Length: 133
Image (tube, rainbow, N blue to C red; front, side, top):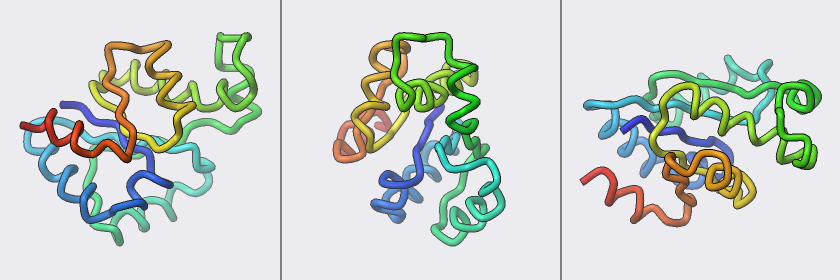
């Protein structure tokens, strides 16, 4: 399993649960923390993840909203979707197999543009646990 995890509203919703999940996945797979936090917040984010007991392969903070409008090739998406689409783009480029997020719009983008990646709502943790078995 190569797992992507959002931070705010996902990891922060239940850090103990996600700490255990990360340790389990890292036994044979990868954990990518993918967030729409500002790239300038990288060091602060790394410290926060350590304080929460989250282990991972890498942290990726997607580009700013203004940059996303240029990077995203899907002109039919609104500004917010174009920004969040960068999570999908990262997941595809890095071979992620599963992605957990709290935002239904993000999950919808995964379902639309990368149906091969299991998009899991943070409130459906039992689905994530099934994948780990």
